[in-house]
Length: 254
Image (cartoon, rainbow, N blue to C red; front, side, top):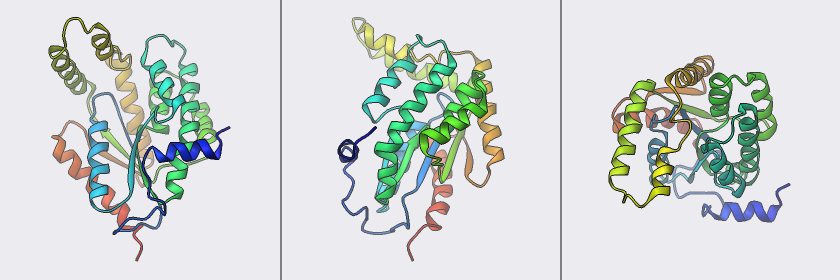
């Protein structure tokens, strides 16, 4: 159980305003916007661009990632990025445990303060990766998601869709650039760059994940937006902002 004191301490990490208000463009509530997509789709970059745009426009916003932003979440992040967990159901439970902590101590308190929360991966990542990708029963994952989030769902989910062949090329190029800048002696950092087990999985797995995402998006058109992740970064950002702006307009205080 997370105490009120611990919850408040986690919130202070994000420097929330006391009253949850901003100087302009006030919204009627905090919005939950999640980014989904395969490895190398550009989620992290677009998350940062969006939260910076929102803040510049006077909308109180924070960016968090899953799993992470709590002590438990950061530990789970280390575990699942290793190659030591072989059971997909065990992975599912770990992700859900981290998510329960994150929702209780960070996401929900932020939303209650009127802060818009941008999340790099959320409930649909577990469905895509552990469900469609690794075969864990989708109904089991859906039920776990409902329990761990207290049925919290995003106001908008942005799917950055990209062909795994393109994303693999992008990932390898990024890794090679980073490795070229490392000293040979920095072995641990080198292994960390090459050690993301999801990035190293074959295209059959990544195609399953991609198809799972597309199925979820096409079944929930009103709350999902599909953006081509293969496009130039600025064009992707423009498409993301166009959809987010529509959401914001419906929640502005008049």
